[in-house]
Image (tube, rainbow, N blue to C red; front, side, top):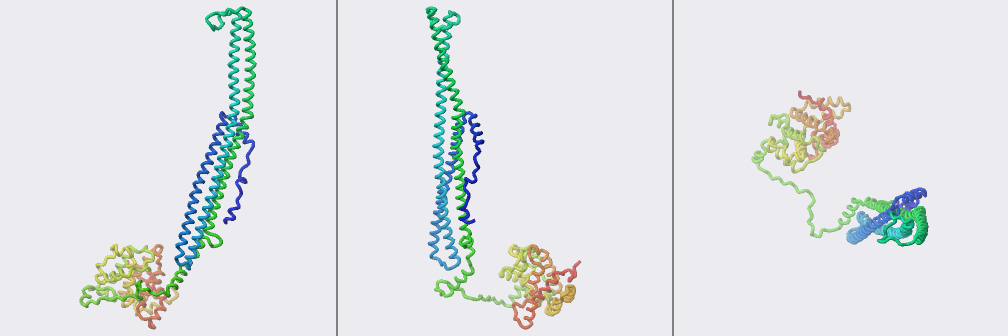
Amino acid sequence: MSVEEAQTRPSIAADTPSVNYHDDQNVISSLVDLDNGFQFLLDKVKLDMQAAKDVSFFLKKRAIIEEEYGKQMTKLTQSVTESFKSHPRSSTFGSAWTSSLKVHENIGEQRIKFASDITEVADDLQLLVKDTEKARKHAKDIGSKQEKILTDAELALDKSKQKYDMQNEEWERAILMKTNDPYHVPKKGLFKSNKSQYQLNRSEEEAHNKAAASDHHYRQQLQIVNSARQDYFSTHLPEMLAGLKTVGDECCMALQYQLARYAYIYERALVADGYALDNDSGLGLRSLAEKVDKDLDLMNFIKSCSGQRNTGNVRVIQRGDVPYKEYIMSTAAHQILNPNPVFGIELSALMKRDKQEVPLIVQKCAEAVEKYGLQSMGIYRESGTGTQIQKLKADFNRDCKQVNLDSDENRSDINNVTGVLKLWFRELPSPLFPQAAYDHFIAAAKIDDERLRILGLHTVINDLPDAHYATLKYLMGHLNKVRQYEQYNKMGSSNLATIFGMTLMGDLSAGSLNSSGQHRLADTHLHVRVVQTILDHYRLIFEQDE
């Protein structure tokens, strides 16, 4: 969504439900029937005002945070831009980074604008609180005035009732005194009345007139109070409640509108940030990052450095490898250190010397791989460390039986063990597939019919010398175990055959490529085919031990 799209939004008034007149009447009736309903509604409006105050306080604080964030962002980008001017800017990274800083500066300015918009909402809420408080106070004053009118009427009624009771009491006393009833005349003094009958009649008549007058006044005041109460509960109180409810409704609706307005402003700010992250113009952070071309920057940097001369302050490393200068020991010392070497010795000679069909180095390395490396990713494909491989070679040459491949040093990187085993096969004077049988293996590999090819390889392998046959059978049995863990090590028969094809058929990498060598190099795919066929049909080609 673009900023322009985000700015076209419906107003909150369009989504506000219409007020139901009958619902308002029900609310007013409920408040009229409720004791202290007017005070409860005053309290409710006060709560609404407090809610508006809380929202205004929150927005004020957030505006301060956003403004500080925007100012710091703008200050940071301007500072970094100034410092970056001293760096080379001709690279794709320099251009993208400069544009990215400009985007961040825009983000800072947008945040300052966002803070200003929030502050405006908060200020409007403060005005709402003031207006609501003023309207609430006015409604409260009207309510107090109406309550005072009713209270004054009730006080006047109380006074007229007291006067009515007092006049009737005087009338009652006069009646009793006129009849000279000694038992019912109230005793008001120590002496009896000495009035004549005429005086008593006159007193009774005056008391009766006063009682009648007080009764008439009492009835009038009672009618006034009842009429005032009826007017209060039927007219004044509903009107006051309706007016006060309008004040509360306007406060709630205005608060709701300001919250929706804040949400819209917030959404607009987020859309602007999203537009800075990615946009159709290609100037968003994501697009700018994609424009960085490290290879092109490196090439341009190399070109810029190609014409520069060494000032003499930087040590220049000489080109080419430093040759290994081996110390040449005497023949006697060499025989003492390596009485039974295993590298570079013919298989038949090793069998005759060590009285073992399979060389001990092959057995030890295969057992170590089967213990620690069957699930190792890329076993036999990954290279070990050259220095460690050479150390293992020296250890095997010194005393093959004493080499411990279970040590932590050798277990930590099983690729060193596979590396020394492949090195041993490469340094055989005669490859595991002898030179004399090379053409026979190649001829068998060229057979397209798989059954005939297996039969041909089986025949050639059976004719191998005992030492070559036993070692080949052992090695293929080991590699067959390795490929059974292909789901872990990713080394199937095809990958293993690619690695061991040239090694077992004769490695020409170190020798001169004469016409015969070039011919063999062209047969590399046949080497792989020989090893893969043997691996895939290991149990058919070799006789299995019972």
